[in-house]
Length: 221
Image 1 (cartoon, helix red, strand yellow):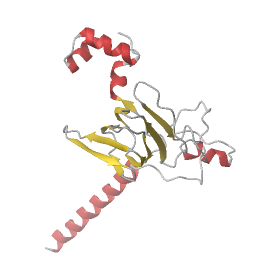
Image 2 (tube, rainbow, N blue to C red):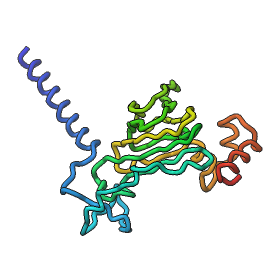
Image 3 (cartoon, helix red, strand yellow):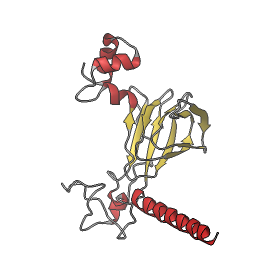
Image 4 (cartoon, rainbow, N blue to C red):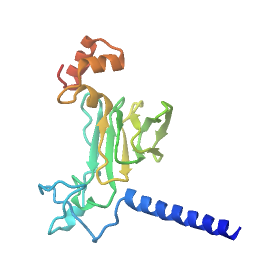
């Protein structure tokens, strides 16, 4: 019985040790300095950006989210990012923001952020929002001024202003550079182009329809 008890303790200890190693390997490493302001012009390729030798307060500042942006485009939607590309001081910090402005009827089309979960706060207006799980379940609702909604990391999601007035939200991400892939543009405007045979079969449409979609999204047949 005592031997069995010792074996049980040893197994638990080994499992805890393995879990600790796994966690430390899979998680982002802790910062080794106070700041690492991104040197966006450095040619060295790495996971993130090399640190600048000198930095200033402006590297940690942006006023880009303060005012609404024009939405006079095909989608009636404009996004203003505030990630490491606009705020170099975010390098290694694992956070970023964005502002989205919608004309009446404006759409932020189905897209994903491969490196981040997103949480939004509605500044004004009303939006139909939703995401789709990997089992094709749509999670959707209408949100209004002051409401908060979350989009899980990597899942396809969208926002649409179905109201008669402009709408806007502020988004936060748990990544300094969340990335974005708009589903339609990714597939129909890729360079070099995705073959018509792939898109035709995937969407069950004709080659002619594939070419029409590509032409509208700026892709090549």
